[in-house]
Amino acid sequence: MIEADFLIESMGNSSYAVERSLNKLVKDIEIDEEVELVEKDVGEVKKEEGSYTGIVELELQFSDMKSFIRGVIKYPPSAILLNSPAEITMSRDEFQQLLAFTGSIIKDLYSHYHVGFVFEDIEEEFTPIDEEEIDSILDHGAVRVGVLIENEDEDFNTLISRVIESINGDVEYIKAEEMELEAGRVVALDLLIEPPSSVFDMVLRHVPMVIKIMEPENITLSMLDIQDISTNVAEVINDVMIQNAVK
Image (cartoon, rainbow, N blue to C red; front, side):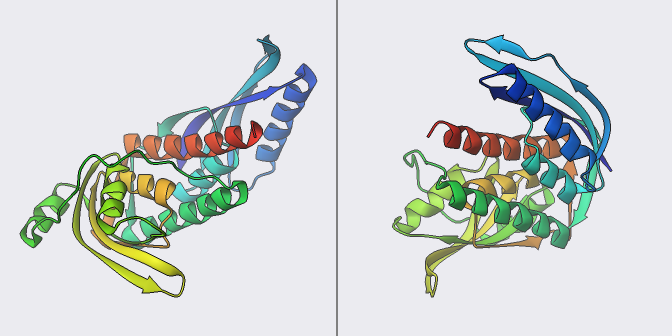
């Protein structure tokens, strides 16, 4: 069970539109079978600089990480406060399925709105680590991840560096290979990433074609990990919505 407080904001050109939007949101959550609404507090709609803003605070419960991430995507909050649990342990298959679930929705979102991440210039190139170092890095809490990432026009080494630099955490790469598939040119990467929550950075920014968790057998996410994952997912969803609104 995951318990969290969602702070969700609505903006509009009229007080009525904002109030209606917030009330509809609450009703949608009340009938959603994958989330339990424990408590709600719909705030007063206020006028600020020519537009109207309203905020609703929701205390929610989710049965597992998948339903929690689904809730963050479907009802993207401006802020999240995780109340419990202190940690969650999943099998590598469960963690892999969670990453794939998140990636598939993000891919559809980017495709629908024709958006994506814009990356800064690469500051350095990375070299693979020695095989002898893998076990000690895994013992320190890293996960070993294999991914296939599309490569339309990037230099091979540039793409490797771009992926590594875009991940907020400690990242080492074991090996990389470029290949041609029917879908086009791809790069296969074998990475070590710590903490495990940082794997979501790669999913959100690069949306791998394939992602596979190779080690360890079980992955433990702390409360801070879960908070970071949900905050980053919500931030991406809200950014896409804002970009679409101002087009």
